[in-house]
Length: 172
Image (cartoon, helix red, strand yellow):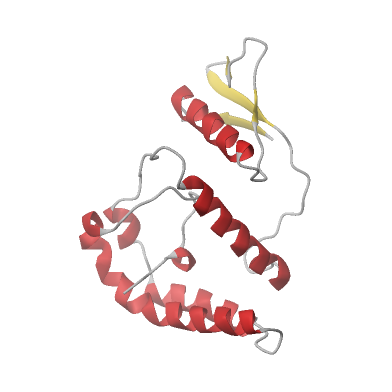
């Protein structure tokens, strides 16, 4: 994969390269940025920042098409990522109140319902726990809608960067 970005700053690419190296050193499966002959993480071509990442062969799944066995395995991998990132320096937080204000509780509840409908609770005790957790989180969606004004009181930690309504981790 080649990243060609007109808005990327070299510091972000360097930070990503350090993060990827950290994940690799902790045996987390990820790509890495391939350095230039000058040992830099990027080069400039026609006023654009260009960088190269190692290609990882795999299958691309689009929204709501991931087979359940892969979905559940990816949740375990996500947990491993969160655990590893606890040992990394604090990353810049770019979530803001606008992110929360764009939240739609109805659409979020619909997304949860799709997952709930696909959990085979007869398969295992773990699936029953997953089912119960999804129902619990689905019921939280209307409560979450009002939290955008209280963003400063939300705790933050290093995690992956693509959030949506299915990725809230809530506690009493």
